[in-house]
Image (cartoon, rainbow, N blue to C red; front, side):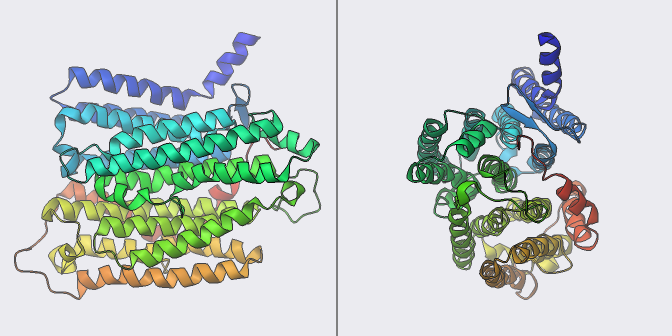
Length: 499
C-alpha cells in the first residue's frame, strides 16, 4: 500500500522529475559536446517541452503530494505552464542573442541554469509548505544570481550579479525570520495546518503582523515590489537581455503564484459562508491585504514616474516591469477569486507583450550595439517589421485597445471596481496615463525622428522575424479574441488545501 502511494505521488511529480533529469543530462552533454553548444540547447528545449506536456496532462487534478509539501491543482498547472512556455521562448531568444552566443564555452552551464530556474518556478507554483516555499525560492534565486552575471566580459554584469546576491541574501534572511515567528505561533509548516492552528486559537496580533511583514519582504523582492525593487534596474541592465526577459516574466509569475497561495490558504476564514460567490474573509479580519495595497500603490507609482526619465531601453522596461507588478498586486488585495483570475489573465497577456518588447531590444542591440533610445531613431523606416511590432508591444503595455494588454487591464480594473476599491482603480488609471508618456516617447523616436545617416537599414534573419511575429500576433489576437484565456483563468483559481 505504501509503495503504491509513493508511486502515485511520484507520477504527479513527473514534470519536475523530467526537468531535474534534463538538468543533469545538460551538464554531462556539456562535457561531451563542448564545441557544439546547439546540441545542449536542443536537449534543454526537449526537456522543458516534455515537462510542459506532462504539466498539461495534470489538468483537472487536485492533489497534495509528499505529505502536503506540494500541490498539484489547476492553479499550479497554470503557473507551471506559463513558466515552461516562457522558458521555451527564452531558449529561442538565446539562439539569436549575440551576448549569449559569444560565450560558447559556457553554454552548457547557461542552459543548465535556465532549466534549474524553471524547476524552481515549478516548485514555487505548487509549494504548500513553508520549507518547500523557501527551498524553491532559493533554487530560483541562486540560479538567477549566476545568470545575471553570465556575461562576465560586460562591464556592468558582475556589478549586477553582486547587487542581486546582496539584496537577495538580505530579503531571504528577513523572510526566514518571519517564517520562524509564524512557525512559533502555530507549530505547523503546512499552509493548511497553519490555517487550522490560527483558526483554533487567536495568535498574538503583533507577532502575527511582524511575521507577515517579514515574509512579505521575501515576496516583494521576488516580484520587484517597491521598496524591495532596488536590485531590479541594475540587474535588468547588466544581465543578458535573455535573462532580463526571463526574470521580468517567469520569475515574477512564480513569485505571485507563491504569494497568492500563501495568503489565501493561510488566512482564509472557512467558517464564513454568507458571502457572494468567489469572495472570502480573512481570519479575525486580519487585514494583511492593507499591507499589499500600500505596496501596490507605491510600486506602480514609483515604477512609472522613474521610467519617464530613462533613456536606456532595458532600464525603461525594468521600471515598466516594476509598475506592472503594482498593477497585478491590485488583484491580490481584493480577497476574491475574481481578483486572482484577473491576475492570471494579466500574466498571459504580459508574457507576450513584455517578452516581445525585450526581444526587440535584443534585436536592435545585436545590430547596433546600443540599448539607448537614440538607436531607435527612424526604426519604423529602417525596419518596418521591428518598428510596427515594437509599437504593438508598447501599446499593449500601456493598456490601449485592441491589444492584449487592454484586456488584461480591463479585467483587473473590473475586479477592483466590483470589490468597491474605487480609489485604487483611480490610482491605477492615473498611472496608466503616466505610462503612456514614456511608451509614446519611444514611438516618437521610431516613427517621427529621422535616423542618423550612419545607422542605415536594420535587417533581420527570417527566423528572427518569425519569432517576432510569434509574439506580436498573440499580442494583437488576444486583444480581439480572449474568451478561452478568461475561461482558463477562471478555472485555474482553485487551490487544494482549503478545508
